[in-house]
Amino acid sequence: MNLHEYQAKQIFKDYGLPVPKSVLVTSPEKIETALNDAEKTFTSKNWVIKAQVHAGGRGKAGGIVRVSSRKEAGEAIMRLIGKRLVTYQTNTIGQPIHQVLLEEASSIARELYLGAVIDRACQRIVFLASSFGGVEIEEVAAKHPDKIFKVKLCPMLGIMPYQGRQLAFKLGFSNKLVTQFVELLAQCGKLFVESDLSLLEINPLVVTTDLSLVCLDAKIVVDDNALYRQKKLAALRDLTQEDERERKAKEWDLNYISLDGEIGCMVNGAGLAMATMDLIQLQGASPANFLDVGGGATRERVAAAFKIILSDPKVKAVLVNIFGGIVRCDVVADGIVSAIKDVEVKVPVVVRLEGTHAEEGAKLLTQSGLHITPTRTLAEAASRVVNLVKK
Image (tube, rainbow, N blue to C red; front, side, top):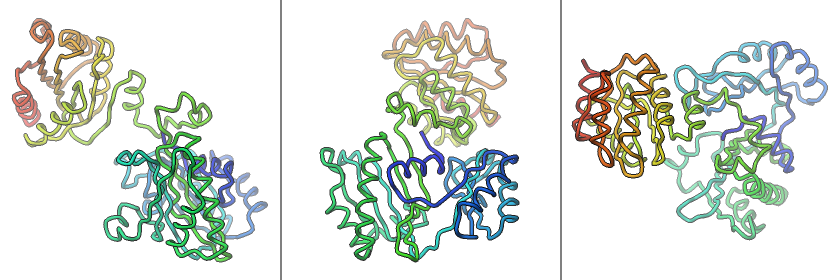
């Protein structure tokens, strides 16, 4: 689960991490009040306006604006709040801007990168630091891999002071900054573990002209599997930033990811789903989604999955590929028939059933009187559905 920048920075403050002074604007009617609060609180006349969306690349898309007067700040907030922001990490529709963060600008001497992720290869939380801040870490890894420094967090002891000093020296910090960085890193490690995070990122972490560290940006991703025990964090979830189809899929315990293609896919098993998507690509088309109904599919879940796929306006055909091991093919077929009857389906549906009760499932589809094309092999199903789309 993603958090907004303003939410992440409030959590940072709770852990004693340094963040800029800021005021949150939640509606056009509250702009004047926010500007008054900023004038009373901020010491600098240079402010930064930041659109709050769950997407990177805000600066390049016009979602982060520097201003030097109250008038400019008000105009910038009005241009953003209530609109949608399109970045390289969003689709063409973009993300809605319901909050804007009004922040005091920092006097920057250096920009750095600091982040933490779970490295499943070494089964540890790993902290990454780089002297290249303010840019995508993937770009740094590709062009300057020697500029990325790593330390592993001990599950029993957490981040140790000597590890903080090692990173600080590699980043070229002097005495005062070394002390600050060691404390900052320790608190980040504590935050990561106590909040069940899967990602923590500060980009950039800046050194100001008066030699202080400030978390200029903040990104937090909470592990969805831990939300049952992270009640306060779960309450911060912003459903408006999530794909509606993906949100509905979670309600039915379905694994669904929206993609940009035109062929909807419903498969049981992640590996089989990937193979299905590959075959669609091989035939010259693109999948509209990844959807794994899992091994415990019921008639209701299959029907819900079908409706979610068809709610995507890009879908021109649907390919159902079920291998009946734990899940029975006749149960899936019954769900497909039920969904097609409930929803006014105007696209071709190709179904491949194999395994437990496959013949019974195929019979249900044939006797339904609906426009469903049954096939025996996956290759045949992929070829058939792509040809139907092309026609």
